[in-house]
Length: 57
Image (spheres, rainbow, N blue to C red):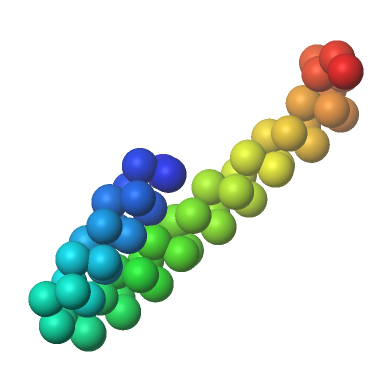
């Protein structure tokens, strides 16, 4: 999922440099959503690992 966020970020930057502001805004919004979704899934799995007792510190 982070791979797709990075791809949309690159599309956003390239489109912004070329003057396609609408496409750049849309791609950056998608990149932000994917990034925060990946972070949320990571945190959910981290909490689940702590609850299951699998993570040793």
